[in-house]
Length: 174
Image 1 (tube, one colour):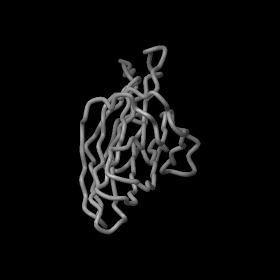
Image 2 (image 1 turned 30 degrees about the vertical axis):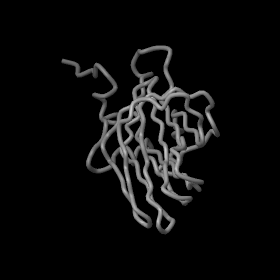
Image 3 (image 1 turned 120 degrees about the vertical axis):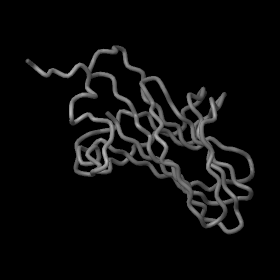
Image 4 (image 1 turned 180 degrees about the vertical axis):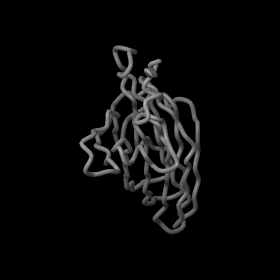
């Protein structure tokens, strides 16, 4: 009897996540950090992460992004900060293309994700998460958001006053 996997999720190297960070070891984990000088009190689109749509649905061409960390740190005194995540925004202008860092720097794997800073959104999409922090503190969420091909998230930042905020995003690709 042959044990041929039916999908790439049944191949051990492609298992979604594990307690011992196997995917980081395999070079499939990426990180992006953006320092933002927020100018005022309005909500501003800062980071756009998308999993590009693929032409074929045949195995192994489907790759999902497993977004497992969103973190915000406020670096300005007396500034309250809010970071919101929206699912499937409508982007009218992509902003500046960014390159995420592979958490295993010696890995030859390059991210398939579309990553941009300062995009322009004509519609933010569906609000799925909001993080709020006072000055000089860090908040994070490690709930798993899965972006299948064609799916995306938009991260916005809003501050009570002019402030410096650091936004971080991490995901696995498999």
